[in-house]
Length: 435
Image (cartoon, rainbow, N blue to C red; front, side, top):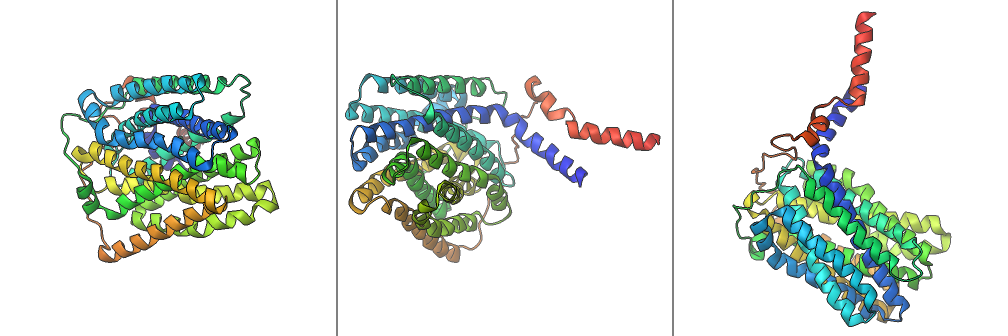
């Protein structure tokens, strides 16, 4: 039993250790922009801005996000992934501080538009880079680990909402610092970057022909995630939660998503990923409306309900990305990542606007019913296409692994040195042989 554990631990270490710097930079980036999104939603609501206007202002972030999907790949293919990521995140860091100088909602809308372009471009760098280093047998678990780091970072961002900010600028300075620190591990990583000299065009029509479920899945995921991050704090405030309870609600939804990543990622590597996504949406269809009835029973039931919502909602995007990347070639990945960001960004834009409008006219409970509605659409669509195409023609064109081709000094010890558990096992065997 111990030997099996040691073998699994060794394989996991070989898989993850070269990606450690990549994941650290990702976590810090997610912590910063999740904190920014939440604090802006709270401050707009406190200033008396209506739900629909909050949704419109903050969703401009996702308009910029979509804009990045249509143009940022040119910059990435010209200068490389690391340089592009560093440039976009540095610009985002400076935009964050500008929120302090004016509370004008139109000015904030312009800032959100430009911030969305920066983070969309940075995300394209990260995800196309990561999927190039994965293969069809381990892409699900690698994307799951990537998403765990994003949710850990985003969850920490919600906790940081509780930092005292009497002058109104402390939070913005903290966010800028986090962005700056996030550049360090990514800039210094020894992980080889993808070849930017070979790339192919990937129109949205071509991507849909390859994977219609992947196209809709990215849109649905963006629709729900955008509604959660943009209006989750507003929803919590409307149902009577204070700032501490709101931060805990946001945290536990994200925690549920983080818990789900590795088991659901492993499951998607062993079976049709479409079935895993469909099952998650079917569960969320029933879970979301029941959250209303948990509030009278206290914090524990609210937190459990939040975990269940996050468990189902946040696994859809990484499994969808894995499903799409199983079906494209390495030369198509940057543009395929751009199209996935475009689809998710379209959902991120429309979700907050539609849900904000519905909440204004039908009350706070309609926030949860919107989640059930889009899940129902996805389940029916996926069932239809699985009947049309029950089997998938996977592209086995990625023989690479996340381990660098030439192990650098920075990772040599992690990649080759025996773990503590292995040394203990060897020591025991030597003692048994002596006796």
